[in-house]
Image (cartoon, rainbow, N blue to C red; front, top):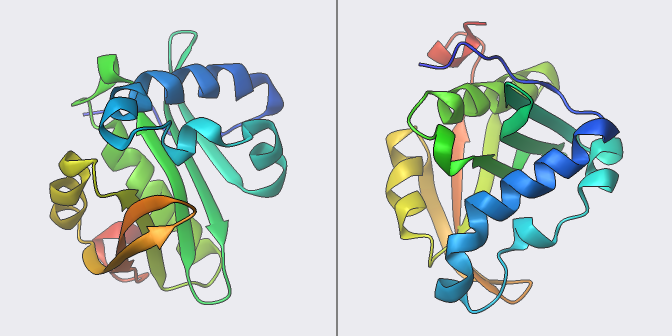
Length: 159
């Protein structure tokens, strides 16, 4: 399990975030036929406009989370763990951070989408309390949409 807690990202983390995202999502380029959306994001802008969290191991960024408050939910925009750091609890720590972001902003639901070609995610998110809410094409990607309720009294409130 991860001992490293997510911390807010700064502009100094942007290059590390880009490397991490390229490593984590690169394997999906062939499946999707183009770079997945997280590989095209402007992380310098997101650090300024969203809640961006990182987990470090040594000098490397090994986990990243991007959340954005919407009127009725928290959008979990990007979550990634370096392939070399997977299985160490970093994904769980980042998902817990997303739950806390929602609660901190008075929101009771976290939503996300994943590409339908990322078949591993279609099993991963339901095991973490998310349920599928729909499928469709968005921004040229075939997406699967998920949502999860969060409450201050639930297990996600432990910090």
